Amino acid sequence: DGGITQSPKYLFRKEGQNVTLSCEQNLNHDAMYWYRQDPGQGLRLIYYSQIVNDFQKGDIAEGYSVSREKKESFPLTVTSAQKNPTAFYLCASSRVGRGATNEKLFFGSGTQLSVL
Amino acid sequence: AQSVTQLDSQVPVFEEAPVELRCNYSSSVSVYLFWYVQYPNQGLQLLLKYLSGSTLVKGINGFEAEFNKSQTSFHLRKPSVHISDTAEYFCAVNSGGSNYKLTFGKGTLLTVNP
Image 1 (cartoon, rainbow over the protein chains, first blue to last red):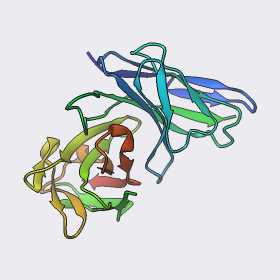
Image 2 (image 1 turned 90 degrees about the vertical axis):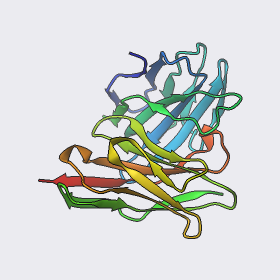
Image 3 (image 1 turned 60 degrees about the horizontal axis):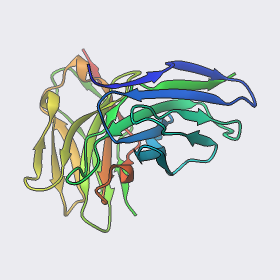
């Protein structure tokens, strides 16, 4: 089945530690996104990438980093600079390109990150 | 700038009752509107979207929404809900066309009781 796989489902971070959330897709989508979801706050965009080896900051990029070395993969690192990392993190993907505006976003099942 | 307001954070209803989840938006240009659903501990799925044309949009699972430009609203409706419709529903607006410009509302938790 085509889709997006996020791992792990639950992750715990110690003070001062960097942690990396995995996101893999086999939908052959060019664009990938990371969102942060806090209770009652909706989704906020952290980073997005529309092509391999290129990515852009979203609305709340501080304390996070990403890479896009392969089309299928878009890992997110939550660094120690992110002082309030506890949240549900969602990865998504979509088509881009000529005629592909307002495309449906396909989401993974999310990773719940908590601070120890 | 664009924004989305979902007027109700929680909506409890009984099974087989009708439901309306309200969404208002603001934007200085033409908009594209979406409703996504999130089941517990899962990602979001697209229910329906309005890009142009007919203002009444039908989606999956029996949901529909009506775009009202004068009232800047895009309310979601279902005539008869099931227990399985219990989920969080997000309205989203995009005035730029590119997906990374999508702005989500804060969500409405629909709880369907037997």
